[in-house]
Image 1 (cartoon, protein in one colour):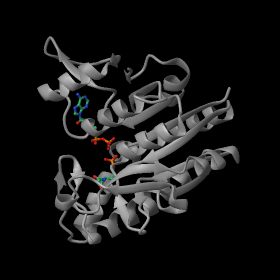
Image 2 (cartoon, helix red, strand yellow):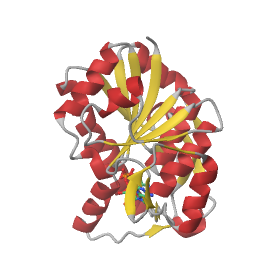
Image 3 (cartoon, helix red, strand yellow):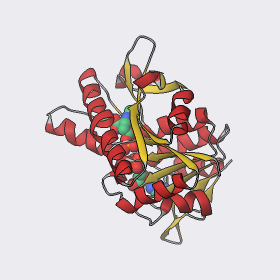
Image 4 (cartoon, rainbow, N blue to C red):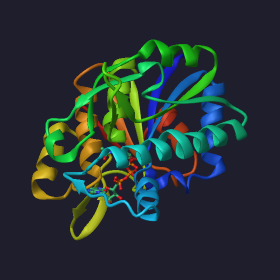
Amino acid sequence: MEQRFVMKCGGSTLAALPDSFFADLRSLQESGVKPVIVHGGGPAISETLTKLGIESEFVNGLRKTSDEVLDVVEMVLAGRINKEIVRKIQHSGAKSIGLSGVDGKLIKAQPVASAAEIGFVGDVTDVNADIIAGIMEMGYIPVIAPIGIDDASQRYNINADTAAGAVASHLGVERMIVVTDVPGILKTVDGQKQVLPSVTVEEIEAMIASGEIYGGMIPKVRAAIQCIQGKVREVVIVNGDEPNVLSKAVLEGGIGTRIVR
Ligand SMILES: Nc1ncnc2c1ncn2[C@@H]1O[C@H](COP(=O)(O)OP(=O)(O)O)[C@@H](O)[C@H]1O
Ligand SMILES: CC(=O)N[C@@H](CCC(=O)OP(=O)(O)O)C(=O)O
């Protein structure tokens, strides 16, 4: 089986991912599946900024990023978090190489439209898919931190869901799996919160408008909508706590929320 997928691991769940999650990742890779990981780390960035006494705020879900904040974002994402994931994958027995979007100009970026207000926050303009494919061909799992770079060598802080969606689109994978701290998109039905097994773009837009999808779920569904306009067939949102969640999402289905065209 030759099946590639992009997995986005959110900062909400990274620290809590059990060893069995990485064992599952390894057995998937052994069965011929080729994973690519793009990770976040928002809570760890906020914690370090607080320790350093640097103020930071979010505007429409994006972190206001000054030069000083950008140093911390890069230090935490491309340093601590990226290497922690690489170590955990290696400990499971699989091979992994970690890099940020700066390495090999892997993620090219430009300032977001609201840059005048929020600083060095980027949108992805291109992804060097050859580097990722090359790492996978060597049998390594690529682990990518969402920092972008432009032609003038300026760095940008990119929302990890946005970066993962762009990587999935440029690689042309079939599936993106978004690992977070909720079992999927929740909707209140008859006073009870239920996981939606699948949602369409129209249903998502209605849930954003009604406030049922808010906060950190918004960049996930926006990235998902953008992905499925191209080659990506489905985006699945799952909880990292669920046993064998990756093999269930890749091989069986019927878990989390599927976002389809
Ligand atoms: N309809 C929804 N269903 C599930 N979670 C939602 C929904 N709307 C908003 N959320 C929020 O989105 C959060 C996940 O986003 P976020 O905290 O940014 O995670 P991550 O760090 O994994 O990117 C959930 O914990 C929940 O609070
Ligand atoms: C521009 C912007 O907001 N970037 C994010 C990047 C990390 C991220 O997205 O991490 P999660 O997936 O854990 O939320 C930030 O600075 O927090």
